[in-house]
Figure 1 (cartoon, helix red, strand yellow):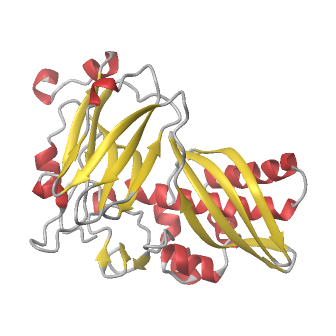
Figure 2 (spheres, rainbow, N blue to C red):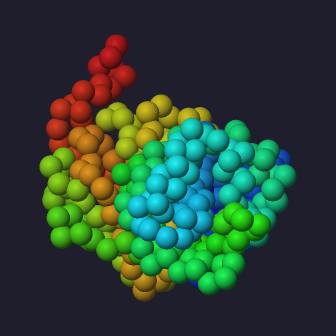
Length: 316
């Protein structure tokens, strides 16, 4: 989705068949999906690329898991070893576990291009393994369903692998919709042209939540969800080329097609503070991003942390 201006340009996108498909422009560091420019804003590239790479890390970890092939404990041990490599920002080890086809499908990049941009954008997004299931091996190919948490957001995938020599490597993936556990509070999130609808009154720092998103509009919509300082000027940030201080990436919902539903599930309660959600899909009629047409929301989770962030005037 073109990003000529905007807070939190998105790094993550999926094709209609839910495969992550990004291409990388080494001249201006713009990530693209098809004809859509993903990242024109320099100050937010690093904010979201970590999450994009984290999704791929899940695939890398699963590749290692398939190599064990036997007991679930061995599989999880291998996955956790790959997760440790990710958290250590081991770019060489990361690339070694992905086929050329996997790199093309995931980043739209060659191995040589990936070697150039990964070191700059390799960010720390804490990753944990929540569940490994339905591992299926057939000759030199395999699939596995793996549930990860990147930060505090659940990511569920069915990943495909191919064996090269004696090593299983990522060769493709399909994103799945995570279920909302019974102990998680569902928050209905409506998407339309050009607004989100939700009732944040049930969102507290006591219980984890999940956004249950439904696109009731005629265009696809996405959600980029961040925590911001209490005095954050959203309207100014939407148009700024400068990096506002204090932005914390929380989660991202890939574009939801009209009439479709999906979930963003959190593993723990949101901390007290101010949160902003935006959609940066471009409106084909006006050429403007949905956020600039009013598609954003803003709420505060009550608690001490929300009160501790002073405004600039108060600080002076």
